[in-house]
Length: 169
Ligand SMILES: [Zn+2]
Image 1 (cartoon, rainbow, N blue to C red):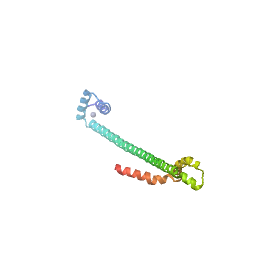
Image 2: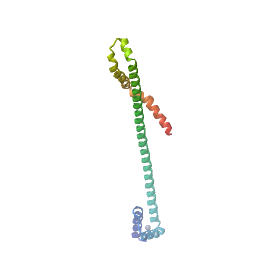
Image 3: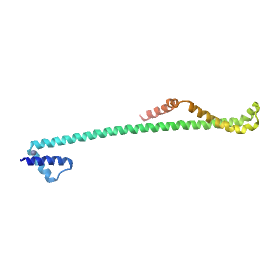
Image 4: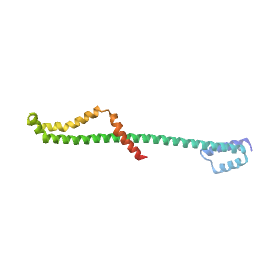
């Protein structure tokens, strides 16, 4: 065996792992490796290195999957937060409509009597309905501005989210 053959063998070993080699080259290489410990050792080292590289790739993609999953979970939590905020706004809205209706109805029913009792003209009753219809919405709006949002988040939103998270586990 001459040095040219070892060189050819090492070239083929490298090529085999990168782009593959032809059948004839492969047969020649296997024959050479059977009779040459040095080149066989090189082939083994190359294949070990290749395996190490593959496992690094696998680890990298595992880390990528983990970070992607974390990002997806963060996004899901964000969406749940939005959802619970929408729920809060929805509840406030329904509460507002309900109390507005009740208060406007009460004024419509008893406003004339109250106006008479207070010595106010009867013409105040009709426009007064709009005032009493708007009043609860104004009160709720003032309360929502006055109460810090953390008070809502601390009770309703987080309680809601805790329940949702418990449901997911
Ligand atoms: Zn050799």
